[in-house]
Image (cartoon, rainbow, N blue to C red; front, top):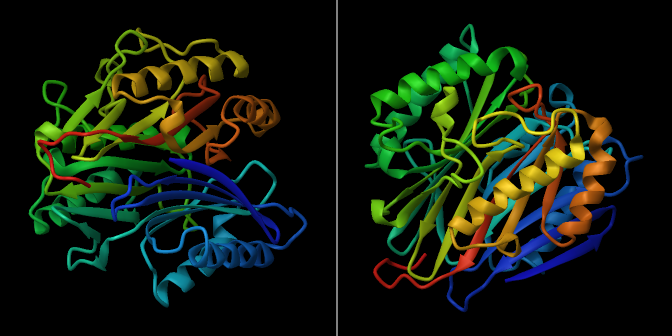
Amino acid sequence: MNKQTVSKANTKTEIFEFDNGTEARECQAVIHVTDTSLSYAEQLDALLNTYDELRSNELRGTEAVFKRYYLSDAANQAATIHAMAAEGSDCALSVIEQAPLDGTKVALWVYMQSGVATAISPSGLYRVAHGRYTHLWDGGAHRHEANSELQTRLLLNSYVMQLAAEGCSLADNCIRTWFFVNDVDINYAGMVKARNEVFATQSLTPATHFIASTGIGGRQEDATVSVQMDNYAIKGICKEQIQHLYAADHMNRTSDYGVSFERGTSVEYGDRHHVFISGTASIDTNGDVVYPGDIRKQTERMWGNVEALLREAGCTFDDVAQMTVYLRDPADYSTVKAMFDGRFPSTPRLIVHAPVCRPGWLIEMECMAICTASHKEFAPF
């Protein structure tokens, strides 16, 4: 693996590259704007110019499979990005208002791979095919019904049908979801209720398993949208390749407090494994918030929880390809940035404004790790 930081005109890009000598090279890149005095249009141009330059140089030979734009004001900014996508999006696309806390108006996370064939499937999911596997990505799914519960229920029901059209199911093939909830302190409960009930119809229960997930504050440009869902599934995978992560000596099961997601999920391939860590906060084995009101101690406890999950999957923080850090209070940014800079100076990451699902949690993070491994019983990635 290789981590580097690339500076270009008005931008800084943090890159993680996994290259084990096969044709399946993987890159994660987080592009930040560095000049806060630029207008939104100028910041977006700088970001897009950098992305184009990276594709011709540092990321040459790879194809984007998923992008997420983080905006400071979706109501006035998202339309520009959606207009570009309408002219020809090159991958699954997510656009969400979660303001970058470095004072800029837009940032971009992009996941890229080489040796893949990509296409939009008739189901509406974005197909990324390589070898035995077809990776199915989707971003920006949303509805306009009356409340978060109904929107989530219909989002998940539609996704179940999309997966069925691909010969997949929610229980067997979905690896990761994201739920961005507008006004999370009010609308999170409705999202959770609908997810619990739909999952129960799909054989996703405390007795079976759930799906790695993040449920966090975030909004679209349309204020009537209470919930946006992004998701990722894999066709061609078998259950023996999937390991659910618990870190039971650090945290309890999510079902203990009425929610339905896994703390993390590891996917093993013949030549590597991927680890998806769900949104993780300062929580203990009783499901309680640890260190209320103390951002430093909550950050350290959160790190300990994430580290335990990674260790259960055979990885360390050195293997982390990308992090997203969510803060409830923007005033905590300088403290948290200094802590992350000190411990993870070269890991691609974003720190954004996004309230966590409980008011007592000041911070949450998620991440993805890519580790070298040899599982000869499975097909390579």
